[in-house]
Image 1 (cartoon, rainbow, N blue to C red):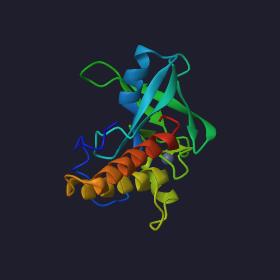
Image 2 (tube, rainbow, N blue to C red):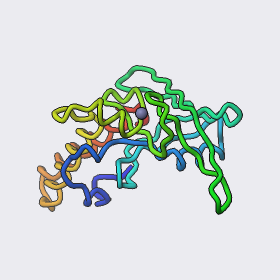
Image 3 (spheres, rainbow, N blue to C red):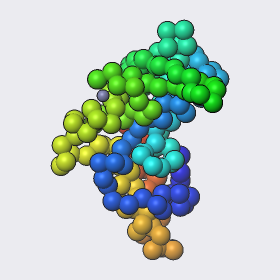
Amino acid sequence: MGGPTSGRWAGWGRATCDARPRLDVRAVVREARREPARSFAAVTCSGRSTVLARIPARLDLDARVLVLDYESFGACVEVRVSLDVTSPHFGGVRWWARCPGCRARVAFLYLDLDLARVECRTCAGLAYASTRECPLFRALRRARKLEERLARRSWGSTRARLVARVEAAYEAMGGMLGAG
Ligand SMILES: [Zn+2]
């Protein structure tokens, strides 16, 4: 995870409905095929490669089921996702997830507000009221804001306090998904 001085968060803009924690199904399956019984699914945000958290994942290739097994705000969560595979013309295989809500075949699954469910973009869009914001994204924005303040402070006790607060904010993000 990016540290307070990594500068990797510099590209973050304002929060939009588009910038939402999500799983890239292909990346998750690719990773999980190496170690099906004990893998990790990277949670990123739309259009960004920064990893917000890594949540434990298990892959059952025969049943074509991906099981995400993690903690969300202290509660144990088990999410089962059905997978689909297609064969593109140019060869190889392509993995998809079935949205647990509407069964649509999708390449990305978005985390719900309580971080205890995953759903497709359409289902996620319906579930989100415009005034509400995902807690993980809110924490990310908080960290980002603190980092901006930190960038303007090159010395002193205020800087030390800011560094501690940025670190705490990042820790909170991992903690939300029990991945800290
Ligand atoms: Zn859906």
